[in-house]
Length: 282
Image 1: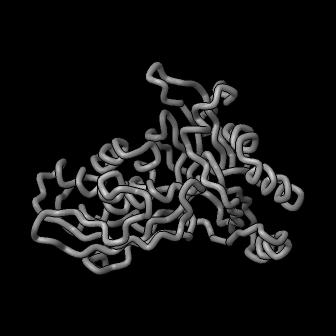
Image 2 (image 1 turned 30 degrees about the vertical axis):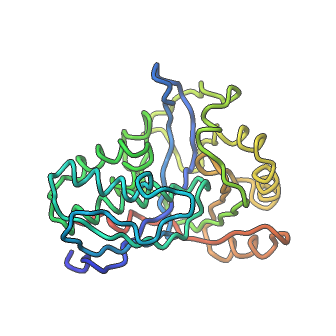
């Protein structure tokens, strides 16, 4: 795809978890889960400039996040190490997705860095190799590299692709940052939901096992979800929170509910994607 080049706007879309079940826990503490990831059109955007000094520079650092711990910088450095590439890059990140929102923004940014620089540096790693690299950065990174709406299992790295119907989503964003570790580490988290075979899952089935914990720890999440469920009973939380969402057949249905949101409750509408925008990049 020749339209992807240095200076292009490279999208890093958000994901929603259409359900999220915790089905066990490994001896090393990692949780075993089942979920369906759906990409949506809301996205961060990245641009890349080549460097000849081999350095990785983030031109748009996030306040309070040191450059060497930023996922975009770590992803680029990991690709350099894995491929032996001596080229560098300056990374520009236009951050639209909230941190601590359960939308996978940081993981999506890291995946787009891997996909983009693998293409721009011509390092030639396969998509499965990039998925394995991504797992070293975080459990959600591989699915964004994978690029398909998918039923994920294990710690989030075993995929069975799914075709999902067109749907428009209303996403409400409580103004809190929910740390993933605080939810997964809670003693009261339910960790024994019965597994489902991917072939048996149907769109609309399932719930989010992390939701009761997040609602108990963060009242704003509970408040948004309670209001949302009055208008859309299918509403649920995505990831470990804070965002809550519901899917609709038409944009007008989503817009009608967004228009009723109480003062101080913020949200936006985004269509579901059939696949990641970079799904076919070589």
